[in-house]
Length: 175
Image 1: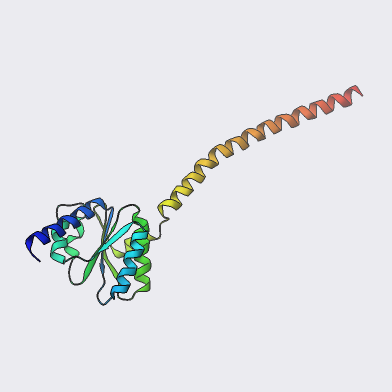
Image 2 (image 1 turned 135 degrees about the vertical axis):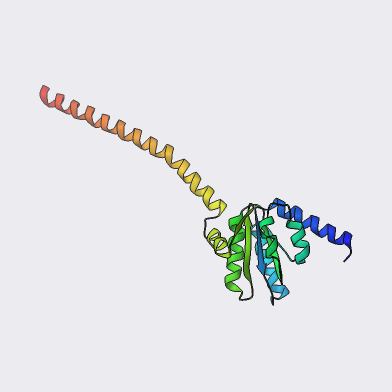
């Protein structure tokens, strides 16, 4: 690989890393190509990517960037996963894959420039996803007007019951 090819790889990884909200370094030593292809497909569905890059090139690419805090974690056989839309979905995909594969492990991660341990990535994976959170927010927003209408209906209902009781009393008094 010559210098120009290396420069292209460095710029590509640097651009992907700066666009990503989450960057996670993983160990994959001993895994088959089919297993890695399956992981890539899962990450793509979750809005992420998985790249195997030479350690030196990855360190250079992450220098002076958003995820610089993890650049020194590149050694031996490792790769990097990026999350662009929803970091929780990618963390879940990585966590689930790590539970299924004995050879795959999380090494370190960076969430918007803050270093995370594998345990913290696991905790992130346990959070509800973006769509679930949006659903909960919508449910909460929808409950406020519904509760308000119910409250007003109860006030009016109480007033109607009071008027009906007065009418019945007047009806008995005149009879």
